[in-house]
Amino acid sequence: MTFRMRLATVLCLLAFAAAPAAWAASPSPRAVAITIDDLPRGGDGGPRDLASLQAMTAKLLTPFAQQQIPVIGFVNAGRFQGDEAGLRQLLNQWLDAGADLGNHSFSHPDINNTPLAQYTADITRGETPLKSVLAARGKKLAYYRHPFLHVGSTPEDKAGLAQFLARQGYTEAPVTFDNADYAWAARYVSPETRDNAAAGYVPYMESVVAFFEQRAVEVVGREFPQILLIHANQLNADQMPQLLAMFRSRGYRFVTLEEALRDPVYKTPENYVGRNGFSWLHRWSRFKGMPNKGEPDAPEWVMKGF
Image (cartoon, rainbow, N blue to C red):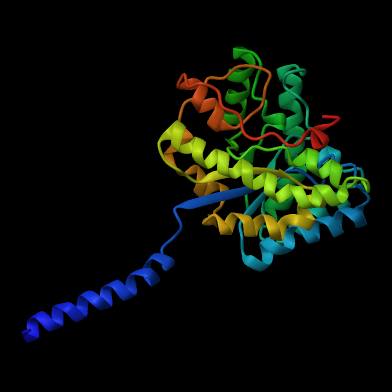
């Protein structure tokens, strides 16, 4: 073997040896933006005094702060039962942890049952405390999340709401990883079902994630940065390390909502008008005329009462 041939062989072997390290260092093709609704606390039936809310919030946000994972919380300011100073403390707790904040309306009305003018007034009312705490950090209020994922049960309401949000400068925050975490959370605060809820929650969430991974390929031809919806509650506060580990085990990296929305998939048209709220992947599949396919249901004992 000539020197040139031996050199080529050595370089080839070195390239193969280095390849796994290069692949490991490259960004994962899977990404998820984590969004948390119903701040300061969703309807899981847990305590709502300021001290309890601060403790739950601290536990919920600790993994995000420690692991430098981006997260955005969507606020219902009217659901806080304390004074303005207490609400400000809770919102600053999120900002101190590195989170962003968005508007989820003041009182979480349902556009299906609320006149549009009253509904949009509720959105505006929810802006005041948010703009104040964000401005103090040099930030602006940019995102709106639809309560119940309802965007209008008539063409007039849907178009009117979209026009209002555009005038207010909002970017609508869609959801692709939709799920029933709220039902599991209610079972978790009940002593009779707490252990079963703790054991079953993350496996259920993984089944939902697996479904939407496959559905993404079916509907748009590829995986893309997904957007997870969960709620501020004790279940997610306690289970967040395991939930994040589940995503990592499936090859996910964590991105901001802004980064996820840069993917052109989020410009896919959707024309659903109706009373239901569901994943944008379902909306896109409807627009394309595809047969409906639903994500895994939570067990009957979890959904009882919802």
